[in-house]
Length: 300
Ligand code: BEZ
Ligand code: FE
Image (cartoon, rainbow, N blue to C red; front, side, top):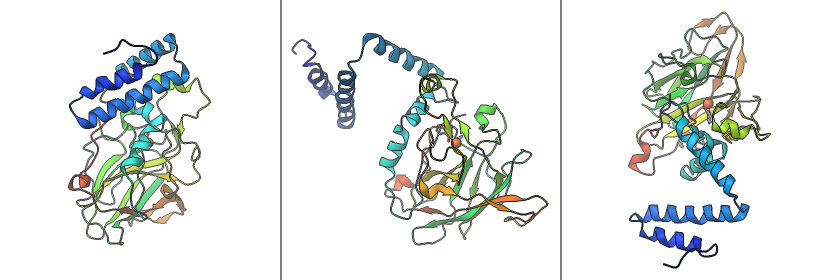
């Protein structure tokens, strides 16, 4: 092998990775070498900047635990999470679009009966989420799992509240009519966690660190592509400046104001309430494994 020069280094590193056993890993590593060398050449990376980046990555790693994933947060803020999501979910016209999963999903949420209140005892504007899980032909999907999670009225998720009990998260299953009805509270917009290395970086910018008000959904049914998405509140603050690029037009919904009276779950409310009406439209699974619930990055 020739000795390294500024000119031949990229070729040498690419050749080195020819020795990778897996063709896919080889492709990924060679592309990474090409782009990371290109990046260093492009900005003429200084030695102290390189060291600062290494320190930043080390700190980011130390901060990341099962309950907190600072690396995912930087991926979100760089738009990489949404890009990977887009590449992997080229859904047919008419299917509900996916969006970023975020760091706050927790596995094994409690199973609740349709119509249940996931915000029992919590302050906030009472909100009913109602609609149908359907396929692209309009047929209701029976036995669809709806896994929902959201922030409380202060914009905090269960893992940030340090609760031992499940807060504002639950799993529901549709019946033969594909319908769902869930009682909750309306979440506000909130700041992404700013007390770590991502916050350190964002404070050096004018980038808004807020997300618009939203509720997370994972909708899974046998034979269909698993959908991980949000519903965003129409007119919410930050709807046009989501720091993680998660907003899509078709995911913006009206939180309709209703006067006191009969609610979608049949109770009589003495207070006004909000109703969000939305049908989740699933596309057929491309492969068997696509129909399996697809989250393995439980946090908190
Ligand atoms: C969230 O919506 O929960 C979220 C997504 C990306 C980064 C931070 C939070
Ligand atoms: Fe969220």
